[in-house]
Amino acid sequence: MDGLTFPSGRPRPHAVVIGSGFGGLAAAVRLGARGWRVTVLERLDQPGGRARTFRQDGFTFDAGPTIVTAPYLFEELWELCGRRLADDVELRPISPFYRARFDDDTVFEYTGDAEAMRAEVAKISPGDVAGYEAFMRASQEICRVGFEQLGDVPFTTLRDMARTVPDLLRLGCWRSVYSLVSSHVKDERLRTLFSFHPLLIGGNPFTATAVYALIAHLERHWGVHYAMGGTGALVRGISRLIEGQGGTLHCNADVTEILVRDGAACGVMLADGEHIEADIVVSNADSATTYRKLIPGNHRRNWTDRKLARARYSMGLFVWYFGTRRQYMDVAHHTLVLGPRYRELVEDVFTRKILAEDMSLYLHRPSATDPSVAPAGHDAFYVLSPVPHLGGGTDWRVEAERYRVRVAKRLAETILPGLEDNIVTSRTLTPLEFRDELASEHGAAFGLEPILTQSAWFRPHNRSEELTNLYLVGAGTHPGAGLPGVLSSARILDRVVPDVAAFV
Ligand SMILES: Cc1cc2nc3c(=O)[nH]c(=O)nc-3n(C[C@H](O)[C@H](O)[C@H](O)COP(=O)(O)OP(=O)(O)OC[C@H]3O[C@@H](n4cnc5c(N)ncnc54)[C@H](O)[C@@H]3O)c2cc1C
Image (cartoon, rainbow, N blue to C red):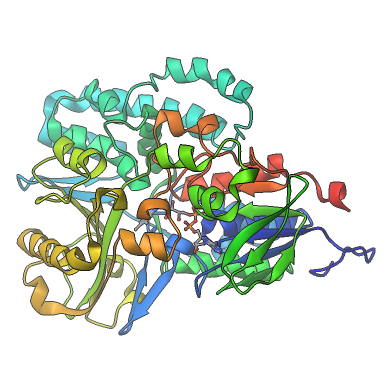
């Protein structure tokens, strides 16, 4: 079978995928494996979306995701092509998962080892060990239902949603992650540490449904991994799978409209005016942008401009990528540098939408594991700080450098002494670039905010409610942001996209 025809010589039905984030790339492989002729159109000059790569002054920086969990979701893509992930990309387990440094200088080594975790909890608050274990049991049960059972269920009807309500009630998912954690552990530092996970996918721990407490178990069960060579190695690997299937991936291809005929998506128009016909269209672009910008309002009854304007969007991120001329050997691969405030800081980011004076940071040091990302004797880093999305009005053209200096000062005072004197390369990413480069509504880093009323059936569906033959994958659809989420959204296509035979 070549890229264009079946062995019988009949043309293969054509699927156009808008966007090459992990959701779009995984969708392309899955459709290709089912016989579709696939064309991926990416507006940027390289694939990966949030997971694109910046190369600068001899350093390689992953722009976004670095924590790979549930690796089987990647392995499946290789298996669909009759190959093995391990032959192309080495996923290396990382321990500790995170080293957390609290504002009072307490350090917590967060690992996947149950015994070591009990000892770490006991070091901080001996009375919380039993509560911690009860929390992990709750996380396991939520993961079994919320991820393993429901993660790839297409919530296309209200009936699908209604069926899950008893389970969600039983698991206490009307509560927030913080509330669930607090019902088990008393020490505020531990409450912070076991409730911060929603921030990894753009959620507010004080309002994100307790479903997201599943991440604690997900990490323990499958581990936290790093792709050697950087996450970009996974992007390149999947791109090669698509090409091996006979699919094509075009960069610098900006889709400006999804074409509609008789209520069905029938192709796309590019910025240069070119029309590309398709039997189905899969959008991996931000879901709000897909509806607001790519489909004229007269074709939308559910996701109207008004509804999208009222929706809640995840936080923004300030990300600073930098290289140092020296190595900080005692800094772990993943470090959380926590500030003096938690609830108040989160409220500044999500509710008041102001740039706070204090900050809590996640620091990535891939050169702790992978010497290939920095010149010899140097370290590659990125640090990210949750900040309000653009709805807060921060002018990042003015603030970016000021904020970078503040972040550098905080790192120098805590774990990277002498930092400013050792920087050899530097670049920043602010909500402005999330809006302008990644076409993300409000420059939000993770699409629609993960709250109960914007989850599952309430999220833009994987099979579009607006147009026949239009499908959505990626962070802004079900189940949501994060690599396991967006890879699961592509998995859902196997259940909602008809067999190619229906189009031949
Ligand atoms: C800094 C950062 C760190 C993160 N860390 C982690 C982590 O460690 N682990 C984890 O699991 N998750 C992490 N995440 C979340 C995770 O990266 C994202 O949820 C996920 O990568 C999003 O994938 P996606 O499929 O939604 O596509 P995206 O990555 O959002 O890509 C969408 C693509 O569509 C393209 N596009 C948009 N509009 C058009 C158009 N009109 N025409 C053509 N192309 C278009 C965009 O250019 C983009 O390439 C992180 C996110 C960020 C920002």
